[in-house]
Image (cartoon, rainbow, N blue to C red; front, side, top):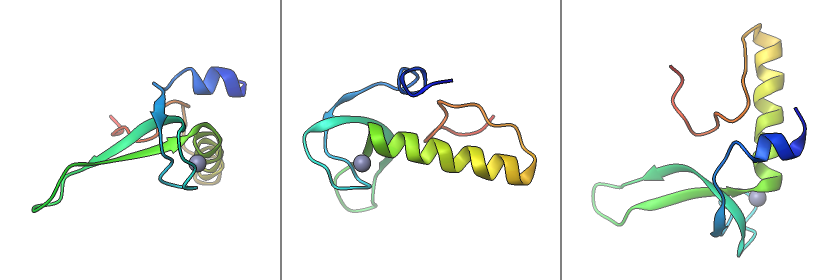
Length: 78
Ligand SMILES: [Zn+2]
């Protein structure tokens, strides 16, 4: 699976990247955090960070002998 295919598994919107602090970039929602007292906070990461995170996940899966499908960052495993 190439970069474009992996990126197409996510929904993109213009936002700031939580991981590398890039602003006004294409970013996808990984998590929503709602503190007990406070506003909802969206954790979004940019394309480059998604690809890096996917790569880390894949390496981890290879090391631990697990299966790993791309496109599942930020989602709960079944
Ligand atoms: Zn980033």
